[in-house]
Image 1 (cartoon, rainbow, N blue to C red):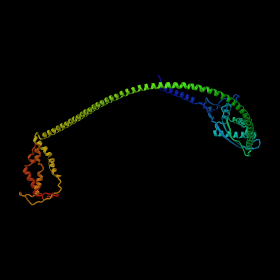
Image 2: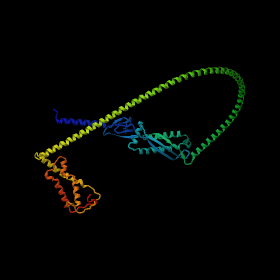
Image 3: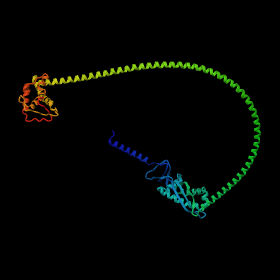
Image 4: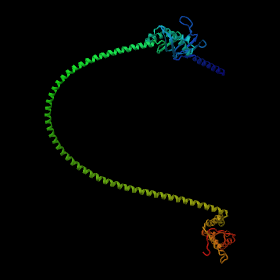
Length: 481
């Protein structure tokens, strides 16, 4: 049976083995294409038995043995070096300025890579550039000292070849190779190169002028010979042309006579044929015009008849359609109005029915509250509406506007009342009494809510007589009217 300790031991061993595998693969290093991987430490021996200082790999990969080996990369990026060489002494003891630009880089040849690993490993690109620049300066001065200014100025290929050969040999010693050399204009302080240029330019100008003069001379001679040949050949050609023209004119005259004869005969035949054909054409044209007129007359008649019939049928059908549309419109409108009236009256009936039902239910509740006494219930309803009924009576005369009232009162009347009192009493009597309002509706007031008509009138008159003061503005009442 497996114990927990055994399981833990197996897990630890598995983790250790996995870690070792990962560590092993992490020591396997790949070299990019733009770099050189330099492995140093214990890397073996050379063929002569000496200890090897480093192992260089360009591309591919290698396993770095831990503890005894390490690695670094050399960058293969090209370096552009500007070399402005000034006052370099030539073989003629003339100082010249040779501005140039060199492009160098670490070589991928095995032997030169080894030199780079031994001399450039650990240096920055700027340091490598300065080192190469010093080497190039020295070699340029040496090459210029072995050459004349004419060779430097005219034979550039020879100069560049010497530069490439000498500079590259020295650069290989530190692991570099020359990629490109670009020389610009070479100049000197004494103006020797400029004088050589002027001399060459003057010589070229003189040679050009001489060549132009010779060409002009040859051209004049050739032009004169050409004119002579032209006149001779033109004269011969003119003579032959005149002879040929005469022969041609004779043949033309004979040919014209024969042509005119044939043209006259052809004109006669053509004229006769044209007249015959014109007569036939006129005859056929008259017949065709007659047929065309008959056909046109028949077509116009048929068209006129068709237009009248079709137009009549269209108008008839249009009138029928309009009548049908108008009838359908009236029918739909009447149907819609009838439906609307029916719906409105049905809704009003339902509303009235619901109001009456609610009023009946409310009145039943009032009667029930009055212990079944309908008269008592009616009294309760009248007592509830009494205030509104009195307000209606008062409002009947409240808003009467009298523009002007003039009172001519002679003091009294036969019954002992003044004219003003009689006027106000009559005004109050013009308002329908409460008892009459109820009588019109088929009801009668309870005894405690009303008095006899005579008693009510006397109460009103007494109230008017007892009034301390009545102010009437802008009204005119003439006694006896």
